[in-house]
Image 1 (tube, one colour):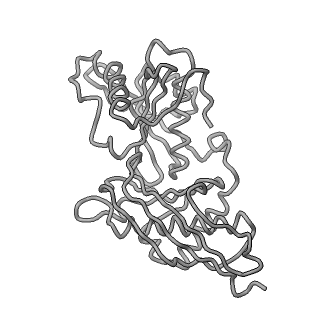
Image 2 (cartoon, rainbow, N blue to C red):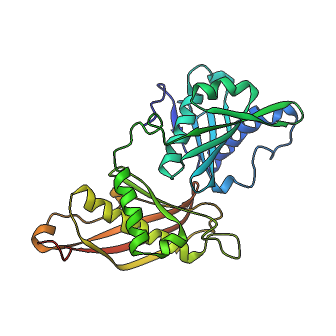
Image 3 (cartoon, rainbow, N blue to C red):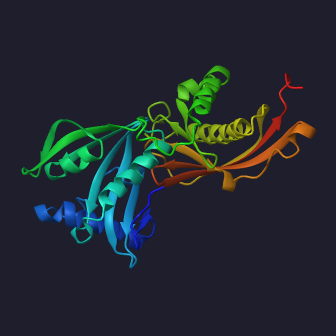
Length: 311
C-alpha cells in the first residue's frame, strides 16, 4: 500500500479529462522545453501500458508515470515526471513504488528504464543499478540504461507468502494440462484477494499480431481455475476442480502481454459445507487486461469435489 502525503491521491487516469491532464504534464515537462510538437509525449505503446498519476486535493496533476511490459517477466518504466510546484514531497519515489508494485502483481521480475542524467541519483537511491549510457535525446539530453530486480527481499516487502503455492500451481498445470506449456501461462500473484496469471505474447499471437481469442479464453479459464485452487490451498483442503459452464465477452484486441485477474470480492461460493457434502461450487469473474486496457470479461462456474484419495 502506497502512503501518500495528506491531500494527495494516486489514480489511474480513466476519463477524458484525467487523460488530457495526465498527458499535458508529460508534454509540459518532458517535451515542450525541447521544442517538440504536441503528440510527441505519447507513443504506440499507450494502450498496452499501465498509467498512474498523483493528484492534489483540487485534482491538479502533481506526478505521472507509465509502465509497460517488454517481455512476460520484464517491464519498462517511462515518462516519469513531477511538477516542479510539488517537488520535495517524495512524490517521484511514491510514483515509482506504485508502478513497481503493479509490475510485481503482473509477473514482472525485472524493470529496465532509461534515466535522464539529472535523474541518475534519484534512481540510484531507489536501488536501480547503472548499466551504461543509452542514448542522447534531441541531441542534448543524455540517458542512461538502468535496471532493478523486483525479486529481491526488499522489493517484495509486503508479499503474503504464497509464492510456494504459486510455483506448485504452475508445476501442476504443466504436468496435468500440457498445453499450458505452449501458452506459457504463469500464475504470478495471490494475496488472498487478488489472483493474477500472466501470458507470453509470442506464444499466443495471431496473424493480426494480437492475442488469439482462444488464448484469451484459455487464460481466463485458467485464471478462474487457479483462483479456486488457491482457495483450496488457503483453507488447507484438497479437491478436484472442473469447469461446469463459462461465458466470455471480448471488448477489444489485446496487442501486448495479457494478464488474467480475478479477486475474491467478485466471486461467489465458499467451503462452509464442503466437508459435509464433499462438493461445492464457485462462480468466478475474470478480467483480461492489456496494461490498463480491459480486453475481455469472463464468468465461469467451477465445481469442486473431494478428491478420491480423501476420506
